[in-house]
Image 1 (tube, rainbow, N blue to C red):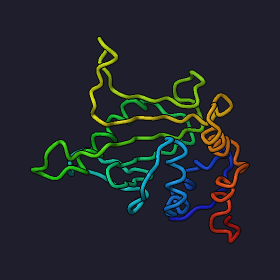
Image 2 (cartoon, rainbow, N blue to C red):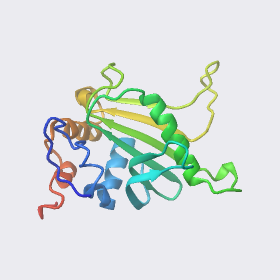
Image 3 (cartoon, rainbow, N blue to C red):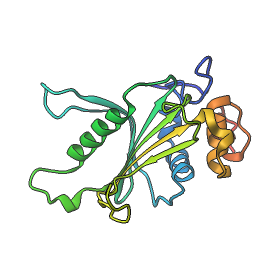
Length: 199
């Protein structure tokens, strides 16, 4: 499955054929997107899988992950949404459970579970709070200093609020997602991917 960077109403790289397809097969682009959005360093990207299907049992609901990648000790699921979705919290919960099932072999110790990121990149705000980034991690309700330390991260990027973002790399990328206008070397590289005009 291949797709160009063009977008109509979805007018964004999220036109369900952009970040999830050929461009994310490029290890450096994939690595660059994750490093910019998460503000972390990734040592390498191992075998990006696009539209990865996970179905634990034939009687259970499976799911197709848009972009599934891993480095040495982390796994990343990137979901691209060009329309407003409902039940995003339960979606992240289910995707997280499938990531864990997929990464832990029978008889393995729980300590072998990798740190994981479930990431949604949305063109519209699923929470209507006008935040560019929503980060969810598990902490104790009674004492916020107590962290569950399950090493899971659920992060929703809202491209519609890119103007509210302070970090220039995240702002640039979200603006590109929303407006389909490349204004940096990195977004121009993504936009030109496959055209022979790569930087």
